[in-house]
Amino acid sequence: TAQTVGSALMAVAYPITLPILPLAQGFQKQREDNRLAFQPEIGPPKRRRRTFMSMYLMPMTIQMTTSELALFEAWYDDDLSEGSYQFTFTDPITEVVTRHTFETSYTIEDTRTFDDDESVWNVSFTLRVMP
Image 1 (tube, helix red, strand yellow):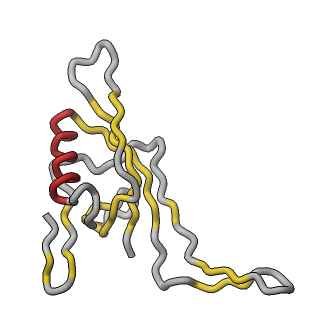
Image 2 (tube, helix red, strand yellow):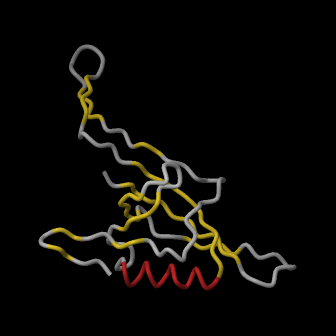
């Protein structure tokens, strides 16, 4: 669970036993616009940088087995207080561990076909990469 050190909240780690690589289809890393715009009475809008660090959104889908999904849901509910806390996660592009939050809750899709014995679930969510 998240712990407080001094006045700072420590980020919880994404469980190392869960898959981290998203499916290629649907994965994106979207840079948020970091500019403020002002429209003067005459001429084009004037823009300036809002902050020194841009944030990114990463919608993704990760495939999990039934046991991995149970672990993910317990981590999300208990350790992250239903997705409220920040956590560390390895960026799939840069492979650097950074802090994230859930921008949205997650959705679960069953990918079984009639021939499959074991369930594989697509777990979809959007992460906000923190500066």
